[in-house]
Length: 214
Image 1 (cartoon, rainbow, N blue to C red):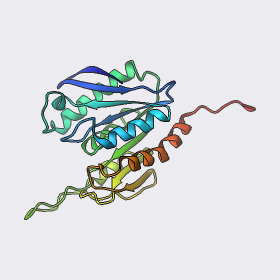
Image 2: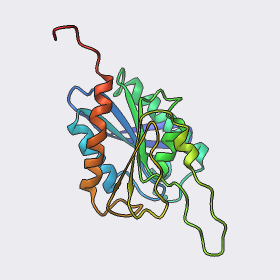
Image 3: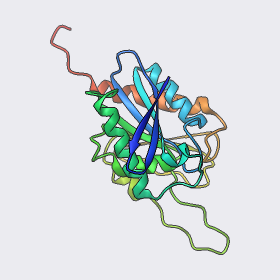
Image 4: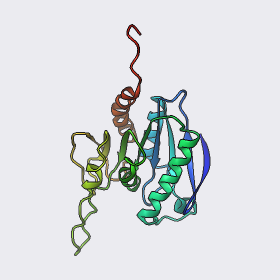
Protein backbone atom coordinates (compact mmCIF):
# COMPACT_ATOMS: atom_id res chain seq x y z
CA UNK A 1 0.00 0.00 0.00
CA UNK A 2 1.18 3.51 -0.78
CA UNK A 3 -0.24 6.96 -0.07
CA UNK A 4 -0.10 9.90 -2.43
CA UNK A 5 -1.00 13.51 -1.67
CA UNK A 6 -3.52 15.10 -4.02
CA UNK A 7 -3.80 18.87 -4.40
CA UNK A 8 -7.44 19.91 -4.68
CA UNK A 9 -9.32 23.24 -4.73
CA UNK A 10 -10.14 22.71 -1.04
CA UNK A 11 -6.90 21.47 0.43
CA UNK A 12 -4.79 18.34 0.39
CA UNK A 13 -6.52 14.99 -0.05
CA UNK A 14 -4.85 11.62 0.18
CA UNK A 15 -5.25 8.55 -1.98
CA UNK A 16 -4.43 5.27 -0.26
CA UNK A 17 -3.44 2.96 -3.10
CA UNK A 18 -3.79 -0.82 -3.07
CA UNK A 19 -2.51 -2.16 -6.37
CA UNK A 20 -3.46 -5.43 -8.01
CA UNK A 21 -1.12 -7.28 -10.36
CA UNK A 22 -2.06 -6.50 -13.97
CA UNK A 23 -5.36 -4.88 -12.94
CA UNK A 24 -8.39 -5.28 -15.18
CA UNK A 25 -10.08 -2.28 -13.56
CA UNK A 26 -9.72 0.18 -10.71
CA UNK A 27 -12.04 1.33 -7.96
CA UNK A 28 -12.01 4.73 -6.27
CA UNK A 29 -13.80 4.64 -2.91
CA UNK A 30 -14.76 7.46 -0.57
CA UNK A 31 -15.25 7.28 3.20
CA UNK A 32 -18.25 8.17 5.33
CA UNK A 33 -19.03 11.53 6.92
CA UNK A 34 -17.43 11.03 10.33
CA UNK A 35 -15.19 8.05 9.63
CA UNK A 36 -12.09 7.39 7.60
CA UNK A 37 -10.67 5.01 5.06
CA UNK A 38 -9.99 2.43 7.79
CA UNK A 39 -13.71 1.59 8.15
CA UNK A 40 -14.17 -2.23 8.25
CA UNK A 41 -16.46 -2.36 5.22
CA UNK A 42 -14.03 -0.33 3.10
CA UNK A 43 -11.18 -2.59 4.21
CA UNK A 44 -13.19 -5.71 3.33
CA UNK A 45 -14.17 -4.35 -0.09
CA UNK A 46 -10.58 -3.36 -0.80
CA UNK A 47 -9.20 -6.78 0.05
CA UNK A 48 -11.73 -8.53 -2.16
CA UNK A 49 -11.17 -6.14 -5.06
CA UNK A 50 -7.40 -6.61 -5.05
CA UNK A 51 -7.85 -10.39 -4.86
CA UNK A 52 -10.07 -10.16 -7.96
CA UNK A 53 -7.47 -8.21 -9.93
CA UNK A 54 -8.88 -4.73 -9.33
CA UNK A 55 -6.73 -1.92 -7.94
CA UNK A 56 -8.23 0.35 -5.28
CA UNK A 57 -7.74 3.96 -4.23
CA UNK A 58 -9.32 5.03 -0.95
CA UNK A 59 -9.72 8.80 -1.14
CA UNK A 60 -9.40 10.69 2.13
CA UNK A 61 -11.11 14.07 1.98
CA UNK A 62 -9.17 17.19 3.11
CA UNK A 63 -11.30 17.71 6.20
CA UNK A 64 -10.28 14.26 7.44
CA UNK A 65 -6.63 14.85 6.51
CA UNK A 66 -6.81 18.00 8.66
CA UNK A 67 -8.20 15.98 11.59
CA UNK A 68 -11.78 17.23 11.46
CA UNK A 69 -14.84 15.00 11.70
CA UNK A 70 -17.52 17.33 10.36
CA UNK A 71 -17.76 16.96 6.56
CA UNK A 72 -17.38 19.81 4.11
CA UNK A 73 -20.35 20.97 2.00
CA UNK A 74 -21.44 18.70 -0.83
CA UNK A 75 -20.05 20.97 -3.54
CA UNK A 76 -16.59 20.86 -1.95
CA UNK A 77 -16.69 17.09 -1.48
CA UNK A 78 -17.53 16.63 -5.14
CA UNK A 79 -14.80 19.03 -6.29
CA UNK A 80 -12.22 17.12 -4.25
CA UNK A 81 -13.54 13.81 -5.59
CA UNK A 82 -13.20 15.00 -9.20
CA UNK A 83 -9.69 16.31 -8.58
CA UNK A 84 -8.57 13.04 -7.01
CA UNK A 85 -10.06 10.97 -9.84
CA UNK A 86 -8.43 13.20 -12.46
CA UNK A 87 -5.01 12.80 -10.89
CA UNK A 88 -5.37 9.04 -10.49
CA UNK A 89 -6.51 8.64 -14.08
CA UNK A 90 -3.54 10.64 -15.29
CA UNK A 91 -1.08 8.28 -13.61
CA UNK A 92 -1.83 5.19 -11.50
CA UNK A 93 -5.16 4.39 -13.15
CA UNK A 94 -4.30 5.53 -16.66
CA UNK A 95 -6.22 3.61 -19.38
CA UNK A 96 -7.96 1.49 -16.72
CA UNK A 97 -11.77 1.16 -16.60
CA UNK A 98 -13.04 2.92 -13.50
CA UNK A 99 -15.54 1.86 -10.85
CA UNK A 100 -16.52 4.46 -8.25
CA UNK A 101 -18.15 4.15 -4.87
CA UNK A 102 -17.77 4.48 -1.15
CA UNK A 103 -19.53 4.11 2.16
CA UNK A 104 -22.46 6.29 3.27
CA UNK A 105 -21.65 9.91 2.36
CA UNK A 106 -18.89 8.70 0.06
CA UNK A 107 -21.42 6.55 -1.79
CA UNK A 108 -23.67 9.58 -2.31
CA UNK A 109 -20.80 11.60 -3.79
CA UNK A 110 -19.91 8.70 -6.09
CA UNK A 111 -23.50 8.31 -7.30
CA UNK A 112 -23.89 12.00 -8.08
CA UNK A 113 -20.68 12.13 -10.14
CA UNK A 114 -20.44 8.62 -11.65
CA UNK A 115 -21.73 9.48 -15.12
CA UNK A 116 -19.56 12.56 -15.63
CA UNK A 117 -16.51 10.55 -14.52
CA UNK A 118 -17.20 7.90 -17.19
CA UNK A 119 -17.42 5.20 -14.55
CA UNK A 120 -18.49 1.71 -15.62
CA UNK A 121 -20.14 0.73 -12.32
CA UNK A 122 -20.84 1.95 -8.78
CA UNK A 123 -20.27 0.24 -5.41
CA UNK A 124 -22.29 1.62 -2.49
CA UNK A 125 -21.64 0.50 1.07
CA UNK A 126 -24.35 1.56 3.55
CA UNK A 127 -26.06 4.06 1.26
CA UNK A 128 -27.86 6.52 3.59
CA UNK A 129 -31.26 6.26 1.96
CA UNK A 130 -33.32 8.31 4.40
CA UNK A 131 -32.09 9.95 7.61
CA UNK A 132 -33.94 8.72 10.71
CA UNK A 133 -36.69 11.03 11.93
CA UNK A 134 -35.54 13.18 14.81
CA UNK A 135 -37.78 13.38 17.85
CA UNK A 136 -40.42 16.00 17.19
CA UNK A 137 -39.06 16.71 13.71
CA UNK A 138 -40.27 16.10 10.20
CA UNK A 139 -39.27 13.09 8.15
CA UNK A 140 -36.34 13.91 5.87
CA UNK A 141 -36.83 13.17 2.16
CA UNK A 142 -35.56 9.97 0.62
CA UNK A 143 -32.35 10.05 -1.42
CA UNK A 144 -33.46 7.32 -3.80
CA UNK A 145 -33.16 9.76 -6.72
CA UNK A 146 -29.39 9.76 -6.27
CA UNK A 147 -29.32 6.01 -6.77
CA UNK A 148 -31.89 6.00 -9.56
CA UNK A 149 -29.94 8.65 -11.43
CA UNK A 150 -26.83 6.51 -11.76
CA UNK A 151 -27.98 4.35 -14.68
CA UNK A 152 -24.94 2.07 -14.33
CA UNK A 153 -24.52 -1.39 -12.81
CA UNK A 154 -24.68 -0.70 -9.08
CA UNK A 155 -24.19 -2.83 -5.99
CA UNK A 156 -25.61 -1.66 -2.67
CA UNK A 157 -24.44 -3.55 0.42
CA UNK A 158 -26.69 -2.63 3.34
CA UNK A 159 -26.95 -3.72 6.95
CA UNK A 160 -30.22 -5.55 7.55
CA UNK A 161 -30.94 -3.22 10.49
CA UNK A 162 -29.66 -0.02 8.87
CA UNK A 163 -31.40 2.91 10.54
CA UNK A 164 -31.32 4.77 7.22
CA UNK A 165 -33.40 2.06 5.53
CA UNK A 166 -32.69 -0.33 2.69
CA UNK A 167 -32.92 0.80 -0.95
CA UNK A 168 -34.99 -1.33 -3.32
CA UNK A 169 -33.34 -3.34 -6.07
CA UNK A 170 -33.73 -2.00 -9.60
CA UNK A 171 -33.00 -2.82 -13.24
CA UNK A 172 -29.30 -1.96 -12.86
CA UNK A 173 -29.13 -2.17 -9.07
CA UNK A 174 -28.32 -5.19 -6.94
CA UNK A 175 -29.05 -4.86 -3.23
CA UNK A 176 -27.50 -7.32 -0.76
CA UNK A 177 -28.27 -7.17 2.95
CA UNK A 178 -25.74 -8.37 5.52
CA UNK A 179 -25.80 -8.60 9.33
CA UNK A 180 -25.54 -5.30 11.17
CA UNK A 181 -26.65 -1.69 11.00
CA UNK A 182 -25.42 1.40 9.14
CA UNK A 183 -21.87 0.96 10.44
CA UNK A 184 -21.48 -2.42 8.68
CA UNK A 185 -19.12 -3.50 11.46
CA UNK A 186 -20.92 -6.66 12.57
CA UNK A 187 -19.70 -8.94 9.78
CA UNK A 188 -17.03 -7.50 7.46
CA UNK A 189 -16.60 -10.95 5.89
CA UNK A 190 -20.22 -10.81 4.72
CA UNK A 191 -19.54 -7.42 3.15
CA UNK A 192 -16.57 -8.92 1.35
CA UNK A 193 -18.65 -11.88 0.16
CA UNK A 194 -21.28 -9.50 -1.22
CA UNK A 195 -18.66 -7.59 -3.19
CA UNK A 196 -17.12 -10.85 -4.42
CA UNK A 197 -20.49 -12.02 -5.72
CA UNK A 198 -20.80 -8.92 -7.93
CA UNK A 199 -17.39 -7.59 -8.89
CA UNK A 200 -16.12 -10.46 -11.09
CA UNK A 201 -19.18 -10.09 -13.30
CA UNK A 202 -18.39 -6.41 -13.82
CA UNK A 203 -14.78 -7.26 -14.66
CA UNK A 204 -15.83 -9.94 -17.15
CA UNK A 205 -17.97 -7.40 -18.99
CA UNK A 206 -14.86 -5.25 -19.44
CA UNK A 207 -12.78 -8.00 -21.01
CA UNK A 208 -12.28 -7.69 -24.78
CA UNK A 209 -13.83 -10.41 -26.88
CA UNK A 210 -11.20 -12.99 -27.82
CA UNK A 211 -10.65 -14.15 -31.34
CA UNK A 212 -12.42 -17.25 -32.54
CA UNK A 213 -10.59 -20.31 -31.31
CA UNK A 214 -9.01 -18.57 -28.30
